[in-house]
Amino acid sequence: MYIFFLIITALTTLPIFSRESQPAIDKSMAAVDKINFVLPLYSFRNKCSILSVSIPEGYKPLQSLEQFGRREATMIEYIPKEESANEWSKIITLNKLIGKRTQAGIFTNSLKSQVSASSSSRKVLSQGVSKEKMIEKAHFIMQYQYQNRQEVLGAFYFSGPSDLAGVQYTIRLKKDQTVADAVSQIEAFFENQVKCIVDSP
Picture 1: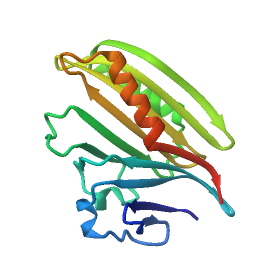
Picture 2 (picture 1 turned 135 degrees about the vertical axis):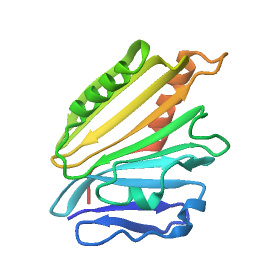
Picture 3 (picture 1 turned 180 degrees about the vertical axis):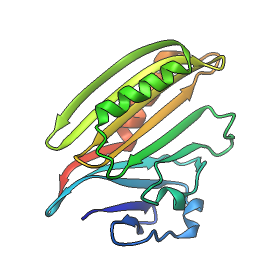
């Protein structure tokens, strides 16, 4: 048995999903500047593997935290606080598929196909699939044009035997911003904000 948690910076841990319980959410969480998500990947006996994602300060959710805490919910997005759902410069997307037995490599290939089908001037800048014990990791960074805007998307996904979780970080390029600069920001985000912990006691 594993639990899906939300952890806030006040060092309060709030369980918002388990196989035996209903979500329990503190309604004040939306006011917290920095939120850490801990998403399940695999659990066996006294060990578990998790994905930890820290949302930087200055971002707001586009969907409710309570909704994302439900087993059937799959996605929550974050954008800078001063921006809107239609006009954003950066967007962080968290996805989870609980009990669907979806492999990270298959999911990221599907994601690339979806982006390619709705965009132009596409180019995959990096990609890869690897495995550590029971956890498969798949990632890619690609640039493309969508609705006359240049965007760079980075995606890192992890899967265990039953569960998948991952993060996407997308940057809409400003007029004076290079693709290389966006890639550096994306790589720094995944290096500093996203951690996969395998076989944690």
